[in-house]
Image (tube, helix red, strand yellow):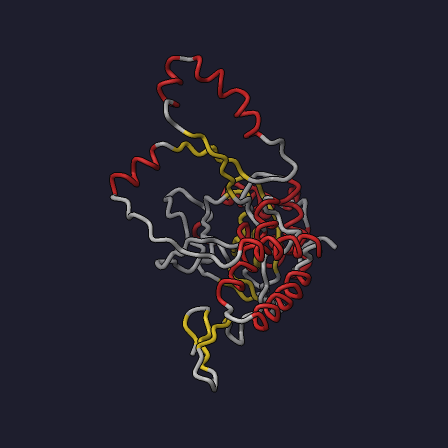
Length: 314
């Protein structure tokens, strides 16, 4: 009969035997030895896991079997054999964990104990200098200041490490926006804006060549640092460009070049002038989150390769 991580077995002789219980889906994928964690954390894992086995298993046969399994699991996570053996031997020497009844602290006592501690928090990085050891060296000097001495009086400074961000934490968010709306392109509604009449207000667009794209950010005529598309109002051939300025500022330049044949510096403007009498529709595709000319132009190049617009210079 399983209860939490303990499996209770009644033998044929009506004796109660306890063993470690784990579900069939348990992969036993413990912290990898090469992961970015303080050394003492990784060195304590074999000891703590072995202590758990020694405490729960009630027979030597079960204990030895589970310890051998533990060795195999830890080796898969690249733990050195000597680290595993040291942790297990240490656990065997200490024996089963015995919980002692402790006097329950009142809320006030607990609060007072916490107030006696000052955590010195740094983000863990194995390449960094041990700042806490330096902190210990200057602690005496801190007490020389009357003001700091009052702050540190009867206080204990403890070393505390904040886990550095993993790749997963950089790529995912711990916050969920339950009121999240679908990103969309909208007109800025400025009465003086000459771009609004030609801006396509949609969350996605289908191009003439069958390519489809859905925007991932809210954008408008006033958006800057964007990759945009221009679609011919007559034949629907399209062009992909980029600008660091506001979209409507860039569109002013396109209109000027399109309406004057001698100013059509790029193929797209010449096409709009000849095919649709200078008329084109506008749809911003992507807004680069920082002002970086190189990054923005690389994004433009990526969109050109993906969407294969017919009016970009080959």
